[in-house]
Length: 375
Image 1: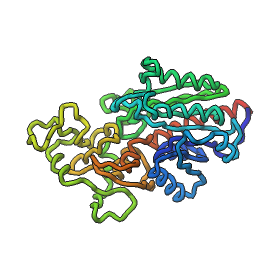
Image 2: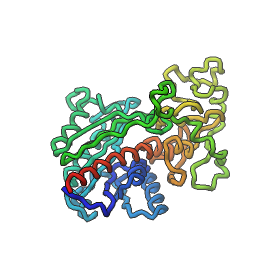
Image 3: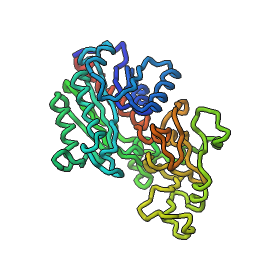
Image 4: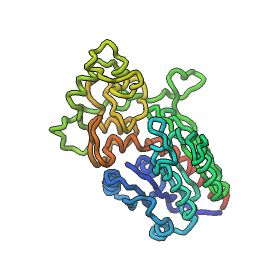
């Protein structure tokens, strides 16, 4: 098979969220034709950045289950087999180790299988799926541990794809965060894909014989940011605003850098309240000399040295979003609730763009090899 080198490879984004994978794939060289996302705040984010960058990407704000792939394929002026890459990170709550882990009993768990439903019609050359590690042992309808993972692999193989998967620690690829996720890559037509080699390593493993740089740290990526605006004076769109309520400033005061409130037994009981030894992520202060723990939707972590939350912009730095990227929607407090995905959760839910870019380069490399072999 020979393919033209004149146009950039094409991609379709499912479950786009705030656009973390989209950023990485565009940086790697893909033209993202459309993104599908139902959350209105995320769609505002996607549209704002598409307009800012003068991109042609179409944003489809809808429940993916109501979209007919063949209709969308026609609207994008594609035929089956034309698309180079189908990618997405379906909702993870059904498989997350910190949730109820209802797996396929949670309707969100079934959204994973929208990936093969679209692949069956579009027949992309490559499919990329991101999920939490909990997918690997999630129970299927028969209660078999790991059954859901086997189901998705089988569905892709039944469509004629060769499947590879890997658990990736984001910190090993230059992201200052100890975030582990499963990445599944499925290729057709005997396209040979290899996951990218890690670029960084933990500080304690650095030796003269293993010359990778150390993991990047929280302090390294947020040190040059100016002091955040206060909530009352914030007028920018850079999401660098301090929204910490007085009660949370009091409760985090005295918690050492890199530690959490529940472990500070010397602090007053009214400051610790009803926290237990299991509450290691609640009222957690980051360390400047280490990568962040995984950014989470249910918590907002605290600044290493100041008695305040990390701002959304600081979260974006930790997640490797570019400073030019704009988030839309509400900025909530640690325990606040909004109907749709606030800016903290938009970041925590997404794939770090720099990691997506490295995967994108690896995918383009194997597509180019396909061109060379088929010419």
